[in-house]
Amino acid sequence: MKPRDQFLDAAFNPPSEGKREVIRFRTIWISDVHLGTTGCQAGRLLQFLRATESETLYLVGDIIDGWQLKRRWYWDQKHNNVVQTVLKKARKGTNVVFVPGNHDESVRQFIDLDFGGIKIRDELVHITADGKRMLVLHGDRFDGVIACAKWLAYVGDNMYTMVLKFNQWFNTWRARAGLPYWSLSQYLKLKVKNAVSYISSFENALAAEAARKGLDGVICGHIHKPEIRDIDGIKYCNDGDWVESLSALIEEASGELRLVTWGEIMQRKAQLRTKEVDSLCVSPS
Image (cartoon, rainbow, N blue to C red; front, side, top):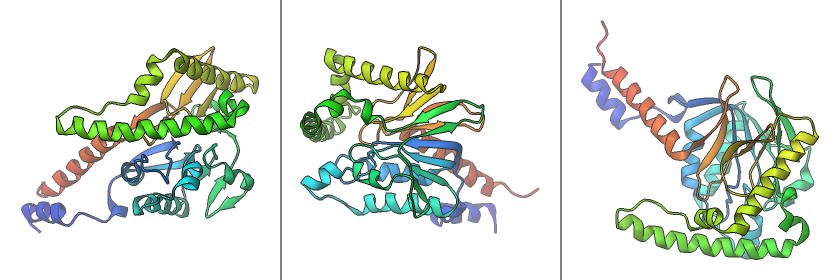
């Protein structure tokens, strides 16, 4: 086949998903997907999952939003595709570990059992390639609101849902005006004094728990705020969410931990695809 024909064949008949180049990491952590809600960015998560591979995939809680599903059933095909993609990864050898959160707390009755190749665990210790011992848990048990007044957490969840609906409407208008996405909830978290204090208390409590257990760090979700920082010698990592941040925590082969976003992964995937097509256009010497 001539180089030009190879290019056209690649452009209009791309290789099957299994043959495409993927971005490989040693470990991936995602949390707070909230499948079953209109705010869930299931389509983008699906793209992320299909573009990446890892030895271990941690689902760090609130993957399915049981709270919202009890109030109003919402489950479209993209949500189903996310579940099927994770199950497929487990079947093909990825070590998939599900650590339930407060929104999918009903799964906690199955702690220490395995379903469809997916391990259900309450919390566990992950050892990085460079020997760091990291506590992995959702983190809701260190949320004072949930621990002391769960009814208030339900109220807060309803308010957050309302903020997200306003955000969707507001950002639709901004997109039409050519303006970038803006998050009201993130703005409130950063600007409201009580919210800042709540986040800081949560992060400090998780770091203290890791220190109490003699570990090097902690990896969690729950508060929808992606973050990596040092707290009194403990490495605190929060992988964010798939409602607004569209972020994940990854471990490189070296053991380095860092945050990635859907946008970054899509950009890297596009670069791989360009190289793949360019290689087809090079005539054999």
